[in-house]
Length: 165
Picture (cartoon, rainbow, N blue to C red):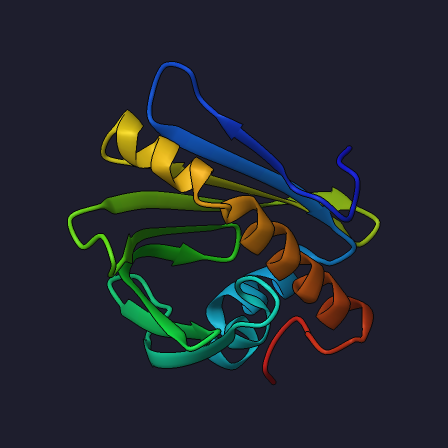
């Protein structure tokens, strides 16, 4: 089992994939909602010191999304399409607008570990080893770890219910 405060980030040696794994003291439904509710997503995604604004967000199969993160006077836009959205899995594309030709295919899996714990597994298939290695050398692990720490804090503070009902 992973330490609950850090993610494991691995590069596949045979295909240009990044795999991220992290356990949370949350149900799969809570993590699913944190990834599909735009108000919640904007509160935790990315590194500390960045403010995220959702431009569009249709977290349904066939929907699309775009958000802008702002920090230190810089803006970073990201966009993609939701290919499949279901309670145990999200498949989406991901593009950083600073590298518009680089599109990754991401799969997020919410694995129920029981006792109110869930393992989040994310796989990002990049279009080349060079693109994958650029992501890995960009400092992405800081954004991943800090974002997931904010998500865990929202869960700990009982700010994420299993539904918006």
